[in-house]
Length: 192
Length: 374
Figure 1 (tube, chains in turn yellow, orange):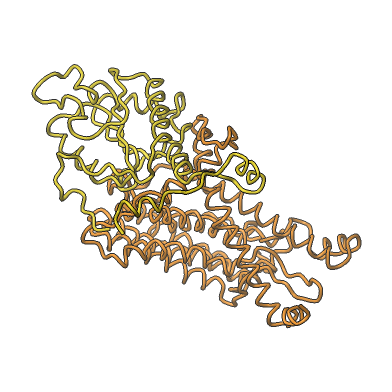
Figure 2 (cartoon, rainbow over the protein chains, first blue to last red):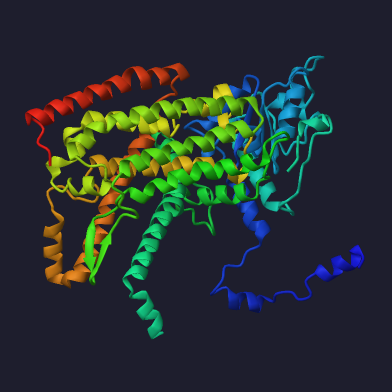
């Protein structure tokens, strides 16, 4: 049996009609696994705070009492990349720092997202010189860009809500991000 | 049908069934209720203590239940997180270690009485899974097994930080094991028993509660127990600023959370031990169980009265448990982390001599009759 045939056989032959859904809704809770998983992921970001510069002060205020990022379920910092979901890149990334960022990104367990916090991470900001990476998207894939020098905490929260919406829209629950093209293949160290 | 009823009514089968129900109750209470609730309490209490709002966004159809659903969201996310085993790790041990950490924390509950003895419909029901004569020794034996989970996790990960975390954990847990045993020797002398059921039974009179005569021992015991559990301020084995994440650096997803679950369950079992040793178990101050049984037995009959007294006992036990859990949480969010050498000094140079002093004082008190034994 060819691959195309297999795919055809796996297609659902019957759609569930709205009437059937209504009849079932009294006794069972109907949801899609992908929706459930996306819902869980939306409200449970474990951050990896990759903080290198002055935006870190602003990040503290976002996590602090006044702006309280924990309201969105994204308060818990995990300093081991294996346990983190959201790589918060906060502050200027110099070329010396770049390999470390790539390594951390590659070490993170799937699924993972990247948050570019502040102008320096978005585009290099005012450091348009030989020493600074001109935007971290030259190193790792970025999900949310929040410019500003530093960004207002409200902007960061807005970015986080946008990221939550993006996660909710994600079509597949096992969509892998893989490694950064700049990293060494050795970084991942997968055997599992 | 009749044969099934006859089979169930055999004393031995009944005994097994009652024990299974008790085990189910303890499982539901610890893993089912307290572990997720404590994850929420930790978050929300920290928010309250830091003047924040705390997690409140996760909702189903707009119902957020003051952030309770965030625990559910965390669980769902962690189950679907990549399960990671680093290259060069000892695969079998790496997988086994989280289980080795959780199981001892659960098994300790076998000897902690969560109620008294009741006679219901001709059956003696004692609300403890196993009434061991050496209950306290069993608790110490099992809780030192928890060290293996941590050490094996640190060693099998093939990571320097993990290994250092595991080494720190083993040194810290063994040191505090010794001191923790010594802190309650005075209590054992006072109650003349190693069985937790006996000790709880002897605390029916409020003036014989452990906390009344042994307050210093309670403080020392709680300090040792928190250190043994490796929580803040004694979390040197997972110190983020020094060891990345300590012994579970290389764990992701559900395996990593099993270490947390172990910590939370151990918190519950520490509180359970404290309630049994110092706070009179299921007893209400100045109210004896016989008085309750008589009063309620007159109204509801001896059997249903007994059931109600049993439920009251469980309720009182859980209330005391919750108070002690909140106390532990408050400690966790109040104190900064000790340096590693400070932890060792505190254990060996302060708590150990103090507990020896306390044993001496209790001995003198009992011999001279200043401290009336129950």
